[in-house]
Length: 209
Image (tube, rainbow, N blue to C red):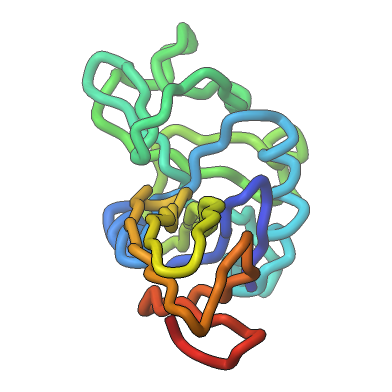
């Protein structure tokens, strides 16, 4: 199961530990999810709370809370960070979280964070974040989508010019390509099809340029 939201691709990655889940997210080109707004948090709960791969089943057969790793962690001084390097400017803590928030629930230590996608025994925890947690869980990865764009170019017969193919999202990159016209072909804002190998094809004359 996978979903797209705001130009990012979300899917479940296996653990069993938080570090394993983060490594699996990196291998896919992203990180464990960084949640930056209530709308994004609501989207994740809506789309993933019924995912059977995230449901923990108790010994009595009842569904338990869906604790799922996200990309938030803290250091020994209580400073929080997202694994993708983005700024922590919004949080959605469950009651008595994060640890050592004045409740005496524990002392700061480097801890991982998860979201409870559902919680049948404590509804106030559903959709909220828990600082710390046991192993043997899955995570949700967030992977930036890539988009390609091509700059415009006008050239006359016998001349040449450059166009730039740019990739944004994920790892940004750009490649310049030189086009040379012949006396058999004239390009004027011609529609071009870009292949992964960056060959340029003119669909009107059925030739690779």
